[in-house]
Length: 231
Image (cartoon, rainbow, N blue to C red; front, side):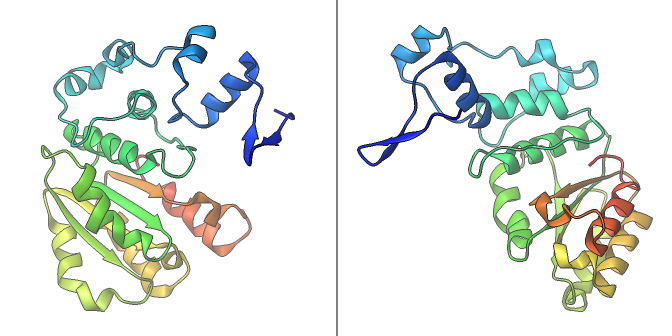
């Protein structure tokens, strides 16, 4: 920290212990070369005993949990760490697997009977990718689910799907764009979800969208989050 210069076109960072831990803390997917692992006694090969750190409620589920894709160590640690927390934030850099970790936590909570609904608020375009790409790629096959996605003003085009998702006994996944927090139809849809589905896990993808506590978007986001079981 505080010592950065360029070497042959790339950032040069002194390999001090302070710098190594600073980097690894903020970029958990980085792998150190063997001589640095040995120098600072940092090993990525040892098995992470996640069951020893698991909440009692989830230890048996974790023991038999079938990950769709094997998690990286930092994802597994945070899945165990946060699965029983009422609220949490994943602050990984882009590409480090926030979505996968979130979906593994969702699956464990659903299998434990803690939630019946996942409500996702994300930037336009990204919100629909949760349903069409991320969930099929990462959700364990032990969880059956129904999905519905909408833009702030287009629910009428998929109202039958919305109603089916409200009634389902499977995990209900609702993906809405952030603009839904300030549109009339978006707010109406969210409130109807919260009225009909009682055990909701709400996820804000790109939480910088609600960084201003005085904005209408932030105020409504906090209002609905207070009605959700997990966030």
